[in-house]
Amino acid sequence: MLKSPSGNFYRAGEFCPTKDAGLSTVDAHGNTITCGMVSGRYHWHY
Image (cartoon, rainbow, N blue to C red; front, side):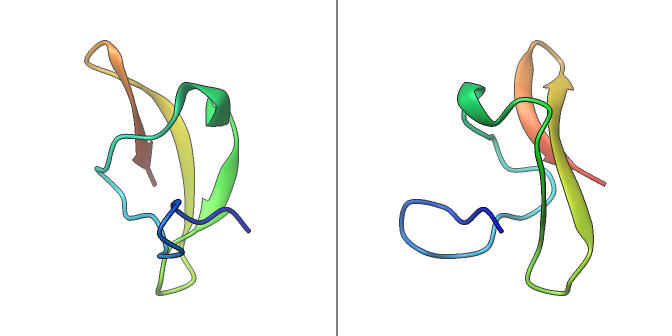
């Protein structure tokens, strides 16, 4: 499970690190989110 550098869960809509492109994790509610390109930048999305 991937977490932010501060140890928190990522949320859909947040920017994600380029190194995480294509990877998936879960948010605080257990929903799967994936790091993908949205509007020219990487974001976590459902």
